Image (tube, rainbow, N blue to C red; front, top):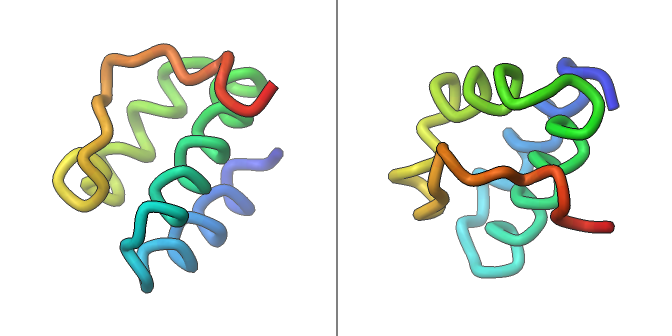
Length: 67
């Protein structure tokens, strides 16, 4: 998944903020981690403030999510 596409998908999920959207963001982060590495995941956390919006932990290895 390209980073720009991940950004688009995360922006869509942020409009709702339910538990399902939290899981969708986790899956997006998993794909980004597998494709681009943890640095790209950290950048998305900073851009979208995912820790406070969805209660996700920025230091978690998301590469195994969604396999």
